[in-house]
Image 1 (cartoon, rainbow, N blue to C red):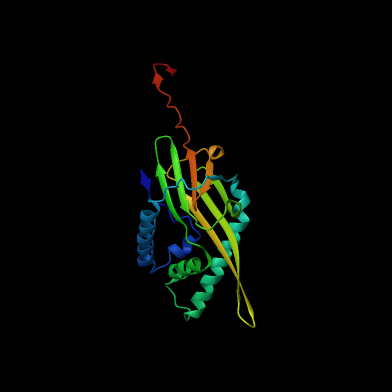
Image 2: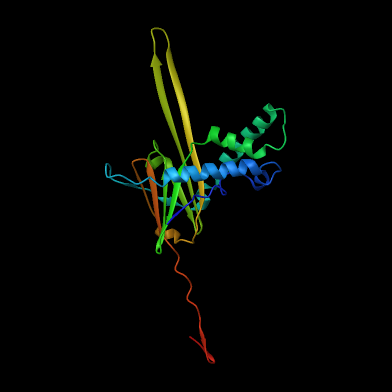
Length: 212
């Protein structure tokens, strides 16, 4: 069963989502999310390359990076607010624009079975050493950064270009998983996470004066 990826845990602050006038923007965001999930649901690792294993780190290891990116998006959203004549009621729109300018989009598909969950994230162009993945019982965080350099020459001048792409995606999971048993691999630009669900607690059934 495929489940839509949740955008609610991304960088958008709660006060921005709750601002007046953002209902239309939120519905547009939900529509965009469903479209992205439809595209992501077709992602399946091919057999053209061997999968590269990734190390899963503790959530605390990514805290500083997430906070820095959050601050960068907040500053850019404030700049957009100022450049538009301090127009109120567009907080969410400004925040989403800032995100699109600073973060590389990540299309995500979440699938659930009786035994576990599988998360696939489309991140073409990123290598395993450029990515970090952290696990919590009901949440996955994917972060990454890559830098590229290019040179162009003519008869007189050398042009150098530098580009930095960053990704940050926080995905809320529909069930609690065992964080220590996550298998993370990267193949053909698709990051795949396989994680078993936490076993449900056994029910205690009272029989007479005793508990079974």
